[in-house]
Image 1 (cartoon, rainbow, N blue to C red):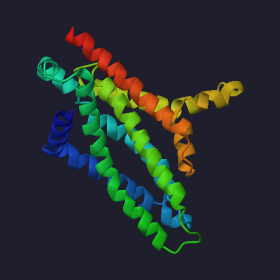
Image 2: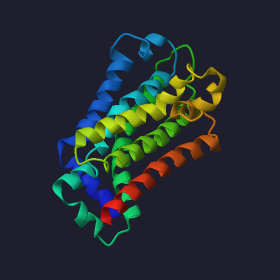
Image 3: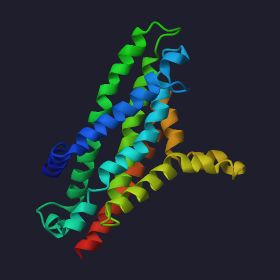
Length: 240
């Protein structure tokens, strides 16, 4: 599994992909949080609060993570190396986990530089002190959100050898699970609370309050496990 993960990371940074992902993520966040006028601009809010970053990041990652994962198995299928990969002395679960871990670590590397925002905001001397508990909870929740998005992207990459198709399917599923169920609550108001709990947005916001509830952790772990399991099932059908 480690060899697969290291190979993935090496391939990311052996091409422009890894650097582009990190640069685009940091650039978009930097522009919206510090340069562009609007509701996401921290300097204009007058409060020592990173909530604009945690509101914006899930939407950027909805497109960025599928761009990273779309080649995971699609490229293997297109190049005809999927059969060779499946004959390695590794279980299918180890192969899938290796691909997942490689993509997950790349996104985490992109997230790490944003920790400087915590220092900058706490040093601005705004009207209130930064809520470190809520901020760390939000970062913790963001890691689980990244894991869920990545598992979805890995799964969709097994559905087609066309990377663009995999990308579109991944963006759609990530959007559906993040905001789609929340949006459905406006249509089915009688069961709005139940439906909203199915979506990632509900659980991510819950963790952003600074209180780590095991139900929220279990939700993200379950979603990630579900899509990784579907990935294994797809690969087993290919192998057979």
